[in-house]
Amino acid sequence: MTTNNELLNNWVKEVVSLTKPDSIYWCNGSNDEYQSFVEKMLETGDLSKLNSETFPNCYLHRSDQSDVARVEHLTFICSKEKDDSGPNNNWMDPQEAHEKLDNLFERCMEGRTLYVIPYCMGPIDSKLSRCGVEITDSPYVVANMYLMTRMGTPALKRIEDENKFVKGIHSIGDLDPEKRFIMHFPEEETIRSIGSGYGGNALLGKKCHALRIASWQALKENWLAEHMLIVEIENPSNEKFYIAAAFPSACGKTNLAMLIPPEGYEGWKVKTIGDDIAWLNMDENGQIWAINPEAGYFGVVPGTNEEDNENAYKAIQRDAIFTNVGLTDNNEPWWEGRLDGTPSIDWKGNQLEEGNHCAHPNSRFTVSAKNNPQYSELADSPSGVPITAIVFGGRRSELAPLVYEAKDWNHGVLVGASVGSETTAAAAGDIGIVRRDPMAMKPFCGYNFADYFSHWLSFSEQSDNLPKIFHVNWFRKNEEGFIWPGFGENLRVLDWIIKRCQKNVDAKEMPIGFLPNNNDINTSGLNISEETMDELFAINQDQWLKEMDSIEDFFKEYGDRMPSQLFDEHKKVVDSLKEYSSD
Ligand code: SAT
Ligand code: MN
Image 1 (cartoon, rainbow, N blue to C red):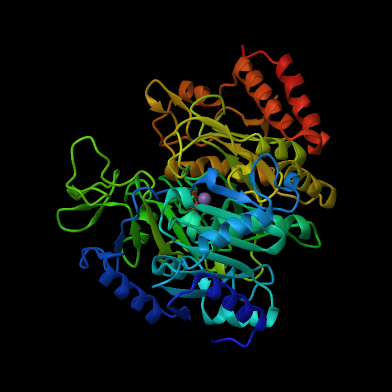
Image 2 (image 1 turned 90 degrees about the horizontal axis):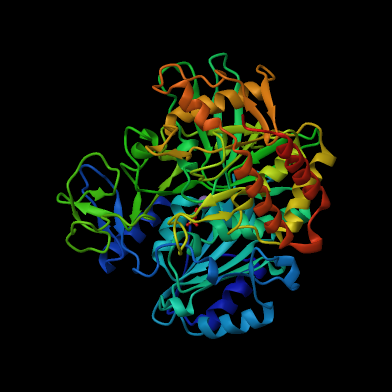
């Protein structure tokens, strides 16, 4: 044992006696250790080495073919009271869940090594950070946790000082989808996951800890754990702004966080604080500060290229683990959207056949945040960064305009709570169906959404210094496809958002919120006509009234626990939509 901490030792002993591993290894988090894990996996075939001239220190992992995404139907919140988990979660009685899992975990590590990974979500020296320990039998998980979190000796030291940590037990089991479960016990601050090696199911620091368990803790302790990127934007006057933005999985959070200013925006600088998760805390002046609890990116590979998102592309040229991509004829990773290279082998390891995907649509890269050319040093700042604006968004081919601003915080909570998005490959299930995904937290809120909305609303009573709230939609379509060019051009929209926060520009008051006045979105240098901009901002009264009906139906699923303020906000929008005519 490498710790004197009794709590940790006793827990590890307990897990050992249940799972019966052949050996136990405590991770120290060093680079040598990472390399030794890589070597081990190269031997077992868990990893293969990619072209070391063009992709130095990069590896390919092929997962089991049934294990390529999160599995929401097998993910449970096992709170003592069913209602605390809410209609937004699957629930199981904690005792029943533990019994079920004890059976599945029994002897599951026979013949394997049990790895103990102490980790810290957030900068090691930040009081906003929280620690956890993940026990796993997967070397792939250890290697990914090395890239994604601050793990090893410094985290263990903090755990010993605090005598407190979130407990995560993971085993790949026998990868049988019938015996796959991702269970959370919020009152025990415990996570138990078996049967999957996929990121969100197995890297327990990420969605399981930093969102599901942390959101529960945040409710009790008056902060917020959110599915948000954090981006730093400096304008030519050297003023800095920090924007936190929530979009569902695979809707471009990583790209927005790593945005490259387009032509005409010389003098602007963009840096990344985080690409997936933000922990938001209010200070004594009512200002919200955010930290990124993670230290690396687990990003969608397809679509990554040097034209659309050069930073992401550069970040994965070295020291990256690729999961479920294809291969070129010269052993480079290949994916749909790569601009060069000849695809040859698909993600399953077979000769690529016409009509098949080369990379899996949810293939991922894992890479340290420090590989990002625009990495912000402030990602390591213990106090975090002060948030200027909060942005919500979804993937909507119709309805939602390019951008609008909520009228105030409570209306902004309605806007966030109403987010709808077309489903993507990040979760198992049908793709392209609109579903409600409040604050992009549907798969990740560890408690009842009704309580979550109340918690969000409570901030307006505590501060009059809160960020402004906006909604964006990069994905509106016409007959020709996506109307807005997206990627770096999205800075044009953030530019307007910042001007609104600085009170530098007026806006049109519409039933759904404030919309930019004509020509206030800078489109100079963009090949986009005024008519097309009008299309991007068109508000269709009928469609919006239907949308508001569907939002109300969704809210009603949450019954009496729902805060009445949210219905008041909803009614205000509906009343004003009824008065509004599109022509
Ligand atoms: O859940 S993951 O973190 O693996 C990916 C995602 O859906 O955001
Ligand atoms: Mn995510």
